[in-house]
Amino acid sequence: MLKGRSLIEPEDFSLSEMEFLFSLAEMIEKDEKYLRNSLKGRLLATLFFEPSTRTRLSFEAAMLRLGGSCLGFAEPGSSSAVKGESLADTIRMAASYADAIVMRNPKEGAALLASRYSVVPVINAGDGGHHHPTQTLTDLLTIRQLLGKIENFTVGFCGDLKFGRTVHSLAKALARFPDIKMIFISPQELILPEYIKNMLKNQNIIFDERENLEKSMPELDVLYMTRVQRERFFNEDDYIRLKDTYVLNKEKMSAGKEKMIVLHPLPRVNEISVEIDSDPRAAYFKQAKYGMYVRMALLASVLGAEDVKY
Image (cartoon, rainbow, N blue to C red):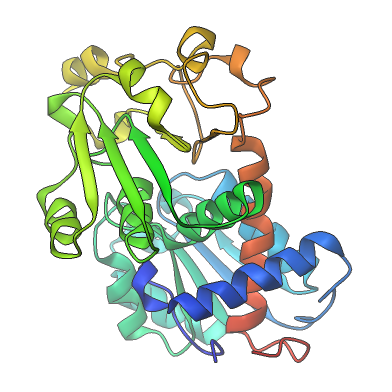
């Protein structure tokens, strides 16, 4: 059962539990009235110490569609954090008002710390460059919906692999599925962290590190593009030098498989040309909508909606 559970990193849920969430999300997609008002009278606290559009809005939309309500803040400047309040005290306070907490924080490990001080479930909406498990659920559901399965694929990750928490979470999750090969494409300054590579090696996952996107395109079933994140850089000159390293355009897409899909956690800056948006392989806006469905499934399960049978 998922009732009362926190979600801090992808491994917190078993494969069968994720399969349950995907099936529930698919049921909601087919009938958006399913589970409507199942969380009536429940409150979700959304605590965003870092800017967010899709994650915050999709969680709030999910809760409202389930009949619940939301309270919280969209930036730390509107919270008592600016007065010096500790994270532990903020969490204790929010847990006394709400039935669950969704939190984004720029510091790695903040969500885990929050879960230790909360008497209600805590859902990690991104902690620094560490994890983003609900984005991972979104990514996996999108792959499953559009390609019919999550196995026997080659997945390419391109862009900021050093700071990209969505990349780290998805790579760890994909390693649990059969016959997955990964190709990591980035400049040397933004290569995948060693701890992720060591995890993949320990699980005998086949992966390769490259700098050239064009040469990798024909091999890919899934291309996961990421932006170079300005907010993670300490040096503005380094950001400017690397921000346009990879730009996906029609020419590069022409080398891709007919049934390849392109994902992106968004927001995009320059890394995907708008001319790609009309390509049927561009799936990033569908991906954003799947995020709402899977978060509806997650909230209904964690908060124990009566109509959810595990």
